[in-house]
Image (cartoon, rainbow, N blue to C red; front, side, top):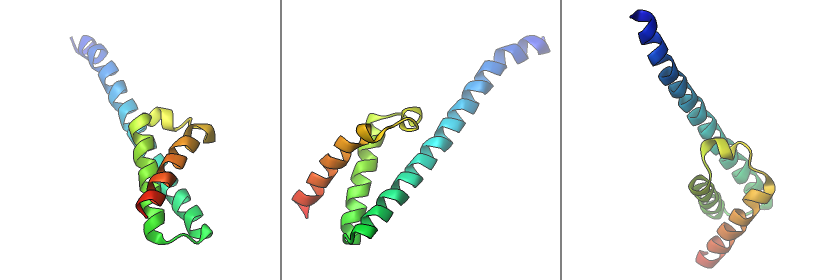
Length: 94
């Protein structure tokens, strides 16, 4: 009985572990993306409120379009249209 119970629970535990690992990777992506985006914005001399709006917009749109595991494999080509859209939104509202 114990062996059967272990066999039944093991896949659930593995899925939970994958979910936790994906969530941790997702959070790390978000943190690193915001840090890099804000650093680039500061280096360009943009006002902080513009940087925050632009970077927040981009991260929100990335999170809407891509799962945590997909975000780990994003290329600049994937992100460039999102960044352009957010830049247009920030300029329109600014």
